[in-house]
Length: 68
Image (cartoon, rainbow, N blue to C red):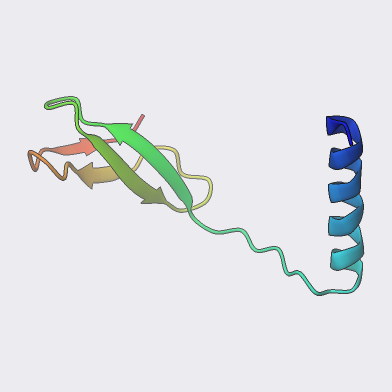
């Protein structure tokens, strides 16, 4: 199978599962990968839907910041 055929097969299976209501699609919080501006440590921040800027505290240095 080439990539196009695999993609079509996956889309067909998802459509069939959703028609049978075997799968429930929920929208949850967004996870933002933020980099500390003070020490450069990576931080994973959870944000509610529709919000782009979230206040967080760096795990390494404890500096309070906002995501971009």
